[in-house]
Length: 510
Image 1 (tube, one colour):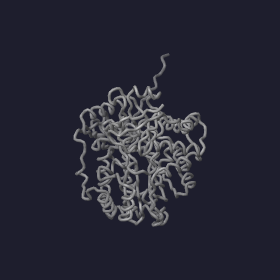
Image 2: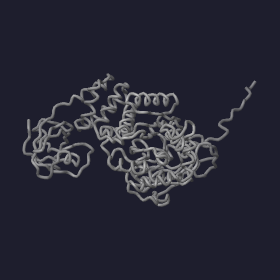
Image 3: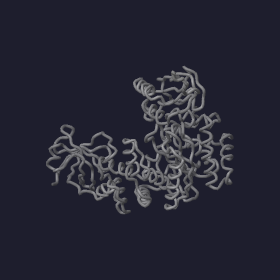
């Protein structure tokens, strides 16, 4: 069945996919259902899209096109198109195979990636694939195939030089804004660092979210190449580029499900780094209680997977296992973290953030051949203390379109604030990463840039009843109330007394 002479009605609706709307009567005539694939043919070509149904938004004989579909089809209001049911994609069968726990061939993995990029898979099928990755996992052969196809499916940047450095943290630790310090330190030495980052998936702020408080992070491949050649580094959002585009679609599903399958994590990180032109990649794996990777054994296993994947893809990879048992620094949330990064570059940062930033920078300096083995950390420390990293960071901000003279106090922080205090005397024995993140997200981070948490005291400190533990910042009163309620139900900071329990011997009568 073919429906002809449908009139295009563009709809100002972002869907993240190539979605069209048909009137429910046209859908019945076509013999289709919401979520099915149809082939839309225009005078300039054809495209497979996903359909949704409507009763009144589009009339019979009309086709409503989302912003993405309007652009992909290259149509405008009033254009005439025809539609027909599209064939069932082979990749859907491969997804069902993975759901059963079977290994996919290279051809099947390629088919899945190709259909993701082409927009041929429904939301249900994408969700099934991500869930199958999470539950069934993938072999290294499958991960290699997935990574290669993700790289080949989009743009690639070639700097025509080596080494080209990059660093990526797998996340899971609040306040992990190290890249804003590490990248400029490394760039000072002349090593190119085209750092691409993601937005938050399950955290309160991704590197791109923090950097966007200071400057534009949505750059083209040509802009990145130009800036790196001119000043040595960028800090951008990878999703703004067409680098490994299948990854961006899958990240959207992961964000909704709040899961991060290990196999997809490996493929996601490496595909983005390779596509961005990096051939020397440092992987930071935070580990500790309440982090994404809780045990050293699991961290070492993941590190070995990254090393193996890098070897098979001919990319030099090093890994660093870092402490992730509590937040890095004291600030959690885009603007608060941007403030703390600027303070750190100016020589006033918290010890944990300084230590992590210079340690990772030191490895990169050794890895890139500008520091002897064992001497990189000291070189990084000296660069930070000299003010050169701060100068370089401000060059990056300016090159990407921001104000190079920005001060920490210039950044807009949420004006709705509340301080949470200690309920009793004792010692702080734990700062729960998960609960900190959940509270920060409840208060609006990362979407609300000024929202977040500023921790006052961390693990090991003695506190008295009523002493401030952390501050919550919000842009909206309702979100502040929600975050406070969550903090009361699930306190993120655990306080214990030195005396845990008293046991007394009571003699038996008689």
